[in-house]
Length: 301
Image (cartoon, rainbow, N blue to C red; front, side, top):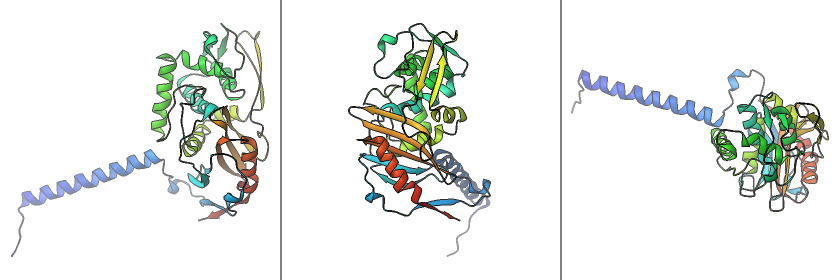
């Protein structure tokens, strides 16, 4: 039995085929953007993939979750419970800083009002003080100032709730599927994130040169716009400058326990280490660096 098709049928089938091909191309482009797939063709240098030479299970780590993440290849080198949700405590401020950097100018001047509403750690802002966004960001990230977070967010369109909504939209844009923020400081333990999402968030944030400069700063003196009110700020990260650590953020609440997000450079390559729910965040991170990161070998392809 011979099957024949009319000219119109063939044209219709070709049209459907073209639509399917176009849909597939659009889908793949959206997936590439969504997952930030590496464009290897754009980078002519050989790709060096990290290989962990030692069993991480032998390392003494108290944290309930951790991850060693390679931001260049977007690979998880090692982890424990890295996709379980935990409170990030002041690790939340990484996202707060990102939104502030993307929504404000560093020279913008904000006035500190309503500071009686602030609990927890502060940079010791004075009521009515006028201070730049840049100086507030140092106060946010070094001494983990909840007062800095409050001032940065209270002037946003919609106030603090509008700012938090923007934080959550940004999380979705970055495909952080196990992340939710309820406040900009991390004071509430209702914030949640995974070590995996937090590592990817830190990786994104560190692409901003100003963010990277702030979180790598040990000590900073900032003032209000008059220069009369002085704030001596010290970074709470005890590992900063040790064993290649150049950031990023500490965190602690009674429920969250110790949180530490670290950017570590080893043999010219950057890694992100996150520990969540730690009894000793600095010791855990130090052990991971010494027993794992320093034993990573790179395989080039």
